[in-house]
Length: 150
Length: 61
Image 1 (tube, each protein chain N blue to C red):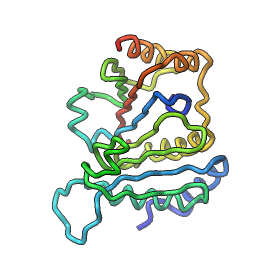
Image 2 (image 1 turned 90 degrees about the horizontal axis):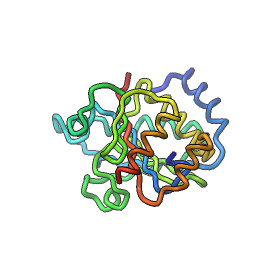
Image 3 (image 1 turned 135 degrees about the vertical axis):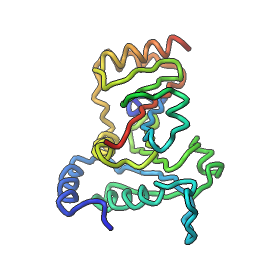
Image 4 (image 1 turned 90 degrees about the vertical axis):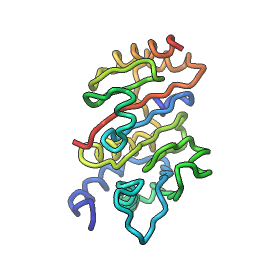
């Protein structure tokens, strides 16, 4: 079953006309298994993967790379991923790291679409004062924003 | 901010999927933002307010 209606797909394709640089989506998920394990480790991994596959199909500037891992897997360790489903978005000109943990559904789906455009354009659209604060950073800053789907 | 600066890691976390994090940070309302484990605030705040929280977190070490 498709997550997006044809109308949604058309709207998002229009939004994606604003994409500039290619965006790489590194997606970390559990290994798919024909066996259904009740209450398995990652109940939203499969849906997130299908949703992302639908999204990247709407623009040739979006590239999805799927990593099937255990949470202690090598690829996950290298990227500092300690939980799944996890998505890292990157593009030319993007300096830091932008990640999404969980299934971006409901309102958060539009946040994901907007984030892909911002990342592609490497456009943070920040005030001069904020850029000044950022320019003085000499150590890591970890910002976590907790959201719900509705 | 993470677009603009290599020191910044910005995460969005679906809190209903990761109740351990909700418990760790005492998430009661959304969006709730946590910066460097030291500063927390709830709500979609203006950029200037976010910047003040960021400065507070950075100066807290």
